[in-house]
Length: 116
Image 1 (cartoon, rainbow, N blue to C red):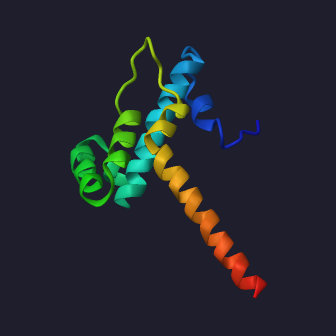
Image 2 (cartoon, rainbow, N blue to C red):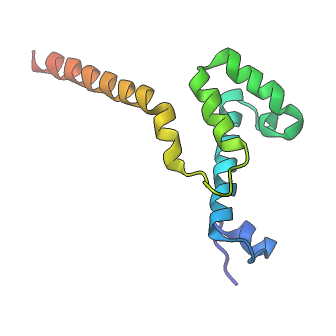
């Protein structure tokens, strides 16, 4: 039997009774943990014992928007309104578009320099 790395945890776990929506919510919580680990530069940062300390590090080192994004994905979702990855765009949209604008300006500057 050949198993791919993508779904190996689900296959080995054997829990086929959970819904697709529950898997999506679990993935979004894992996404929040991943962002927290990257922000803290520590794998143990997303463990329950270190969660408060990690959030304080994020609050001191990064923007309030990043902390809100992490909390949004870490906290359990309302069963009546499940979370979606699309929920993060209003939280990071302004910074995202500002970064894209800066990239375009930088590209224009480089293009003008090459044209000389």
